[in-house]
Each structure stands twice: as C-alpha cells, then as structure tokens.
Image 1 (tube, rainbow, N blue to C red):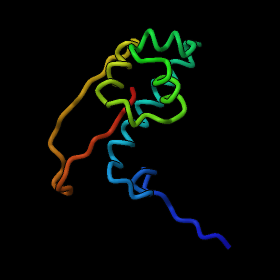
Image 2 (image 1 turned 30 degrees about the horizontal axis):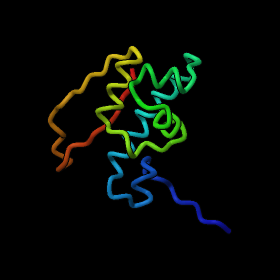
Image 3 (image 1 turned 90 degrees about the vertical axis):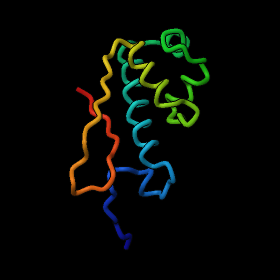
Length: 106
C-alpha cells in the first residue's frame, strides 16, 4: 500500500529546495505569463517580441524551465502583456518571525 502525505502547497519546499519560496513565486508568475500568451494565441516568436526575451527563453518558460529568468524580468513581462503589477510591503503578523512573499492575481 502506498502512503500518501499531504503537501505544504509549495512543491519546491516539499522537495527541500534551498530557494523554494523564490521558485514558487516564479512558477506562479511564469504560469500567468504563459496563460496570457496562450489566451492571445501568440506564437513563441510573437511572444518573444512582446516580452523582450529570446524565443528559446520563451520556449523554456512555457515548458516550466524558468531558473534563468529573474522575478524582475517576469514582472516586466506581465507589464508588457498589459497587466498592472503592484508590490505591497506590509508588516508581518506577530505570529510569524519572518515575512513571506506571495503572488495574488486579481
């Protein structure tokens, strides 16, 4: 019988990745970028021109390989795709010693 364990909600943390939080944020940003590209029926070449990324980078991102693309570049890509991006910094609750980074799509 196979034992099933509940995940934390962050697959990178579940895999003990050192940069789990960053990778989770990047995965969410990449997913949104790719969904917009698909919804607009853009080819990778067309998306490359809009995003200011080489076509091979667009291809990699669309296949889930985004380690070579910074969060800042991904935010720029969302803006180039017509999305407003807001970064809100607020005090973390006292129940946590550290703050967290999360992506919320409105």
